[in-house]
Amino acid sequence: MFRFHKSLDVITLFHKASSPASIRAQTLLKQISAHASESATEDQASDHNEQNKFQRTEFELNVTEDPPTSDQLRTILEYVGSGAGRAGQIVEGATGEADALTKLKENPDSFQRPVVVFGYRESEIMKMISQLPKEANSV
Image 1 (cartoon, helix red, strand yellow):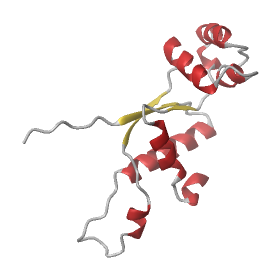
Image 2 (image 1 turned 135 degrees about the vertical axis):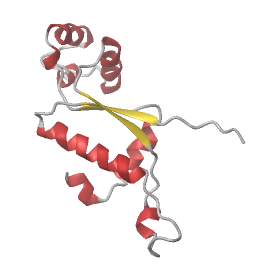
Image 3 (image 1 turned 45 degrees about the vertical axis):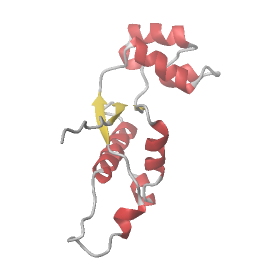
Image 4 (image 1 turned 180 degrees about the vertical axis):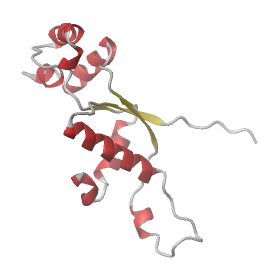
């Protein structure tokens, strides 16, 4: 029987290897990705409570040290909103979307990493992250 495979949602981490926060975010996302694909089978240990406790959605993790494209930056800024100082949280010193685009072109390092961008089913992925055991959140 022919069957279409559902494509995985993509989570993109705009990463900076020298940033401790970015390293923690990458580690956490890798752990979540690994745990999302785990499952217990009947012939494994008899206690399936841990595996059954969390319903997780598998996703593709895309880690990049490149700055976002102009379109990606616009989307990120739309998501965080246009409130006072919001653009400056994403692009250092930016006062708005146009300023953020200009500053990013002038200096790609002005992009504040880490930034995690979720694919289409953001609410499912956020729910999955919130279901992590508390010790995983201390990475």
